[in-house]
Each structure stands twice: as C-alpha cells, then as structure tokens.
Image (cartoon, rainbow, N blue to C red; front, side, top):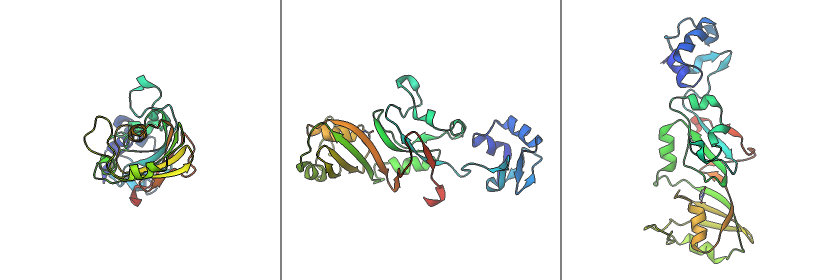
Length: 229
Ligand code: URA
C-alpha cells in the first residue's frame, strides 16, 4: 500500500499538491470507487486516473530503438539525447528512467531504459554475463581468421591490461559481421575490430540478453513487462 499523492508523483503524473486537485476533481478511483483523500493509502494496482490504470507501478523497463545521432547522456551539449525520444512523464518519475549502459552516438539499435536500479546493476555488472549482439559493417573484406582471434579470449585492447572475454563472430557477408560479446567495455566492438586493422563503418545492436528489437521502428520504444524478468 502507498500514499496516493506520493504514488502519483513518484510515477511522474503530477506533484503531490496537484494530486490533491486530481482527487478533488474526482479523477482518481480505486476499484472503480472515487477516492476522496490524497493522503490515503492505496493499492497501486487498483488505481485508475481518468479511467486508465497507472503506468508501470512496480517499476518501468522498456526497450528503445536508438537511432544514430542520439547520445545516451542527460546533457544535450553533444546533440539530441535519447531522453527526447521517451515520454516526459518517464523523466519525472522518481527514481528517473535512465539507460542500462550506453550506445555510442554513432551506434543504433536496442537500448534498455529503466527506473529499477537493481536491474541496471544486474544487466551491466561485469559478472552479469549478458549477451549483446551487434551487426557491424566494416571498411573492407573480413578475414575468416577473425572468428578464431575473437573466440580465443586473449585479445588485448589498447590501453587495457586484461584481455577481452571470448566473443562469437559470424561472418554474414564479405563486409558484414555479427558479433556477440558479454562485456561492455568502452567502444568495445569498434576497438576489437580496430585492434585487427578493420574500421567499423556502421554498428547496430540487435539484441541485449533475452530482448531483441523485433519490428520496433527506429526512434520508437516498447514497454517490457517487469513480471517476466
Ligand atoms: N561497442 C561499440 O564500439 N560501440 C557501442 O555503442 C557499443 C559497443
């Protein structure tokens, strides 16, 4: 049970003061019964506002199909941010929605966003062992030997002292490859190819753990039910 005004404000609907006005206007119901007090304890799952159930009352998880050109920070000094593609209400939630890890400005594809702090940790901790699948377009023809080089687990990136964990490379066409990694080092995919003399011209993340983009259009998002996790 949660206090109604706190609940509505933590889900980004309004301030606590505005919650009083919503109640007065008879816009909030619990099990179809109009509520009369903004400070009463309520069951978040039984509440409707203007007839609609509350959005993601147990925490929000969504996937975004990030377009090239958007940055994963809140600071818009580097160009448009992914947060401009999400509903304003998500950013007013407390805790606010943030991305699970990041994609480079020049990378497109699947980005998870959530306000559930434990999920960010679960998905991004080095021990998490979450598979991330990328489609990369290279500047020249791929060499089948790269499959073995990336799989060995001894690939060193410049400036680092631990080799990359084994990664799975599938050559899709002469200059396109699908790479599956379980780590999330800075610019990892681009740097892995660079270490062998290839330049990644286009990079797209198709999958993150069990989640894949499916037919989600670029710039669009989709909620993921948190009870399935
Ligand atoms: N590896 C990269 O180089 N860039 C990304 O955005 C993600 C993985």
